[in-house]
Image 1 (cartoon, rainbow, N blue to C red):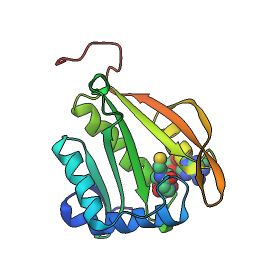
Image 2: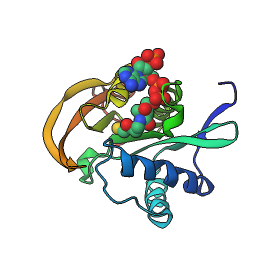
Image 3: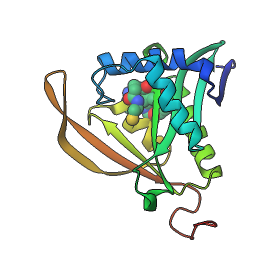
Image 4: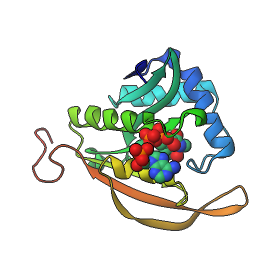
Amino acid sequence: MSSLEIRAATAGDLPSVTEIYHHAVRYGTATFELIPPDLAEMTRRFGVLMDGGFPYLVAVLEGRVVGYAYAGAYRPRPAYRFTVENSVYLEPAIHRRGIGLQLLQRLITESEARGYRQMIAVIGDSANAGSIGVHARCGFEMIGTHPDVGFKFGRWLDTVMMQRALGEGGETLPAIS
Ligand SMILES: CC(C)(COP(=O)(O)OP(=O)(O)OC[C@H]1O[C@@H](n2cnc3c(N)ncnc32)[C@H](O)[C@@H]1OP(=O)(O)O)[C@@H](O)C(=O)NCCC(=O)NCCS
């Protein structure tokens, strides 16, 4: 795994990111989107995150983008401004080689550096052992399950909520309010 690089995403990475996400939308239950967003829509979403100053990372293996992770606003109302929701997706062929863990660890570090205090994972499908496992490895605690809130591929799906404090979490007040 010596050629693995985790770095900030650029607009040039978005075709690969779009392709990775397409697979997750078409075949997976981690995301509740049903129609894969095209490159223009993924570019728009990237722009929103960049404008907000959020971290957006890619994992590059042997010169190829094989995964990505970003943090964005958890909810739009302003009192939530120190809380982010995270996303992490990899190409299926490279699951369980430690890359998701490295992406998520770096995303946590980048989010802490920006002053965020809580990170929330809304995990699609309580059967998503990979996502639950990697979040647990990164120190996320189980908050609970919303049963049967999604419907995809002809069946009901749960969401699993996990949460991790960033930096000093709720122990101290933020330096800027
Ligand atoms: C979830 C995902 C990002 C995990 O990335 P990954 O590179 O496959 O996971 P890692 O190899 O870094 O695993 C790190 C740890 O997480 C846990 N883990 C990972 N996959 C697991 C699985 N299938 N079952 C149980 N635990 C698992 C393990 O503790 C693992 O450490 P170990 O291999 O030393 O036991 C990846 O599987 C993925 O892209 N899945 C599809 C999309 C998705 O579910 N994204 C999350 C949206 S919330």
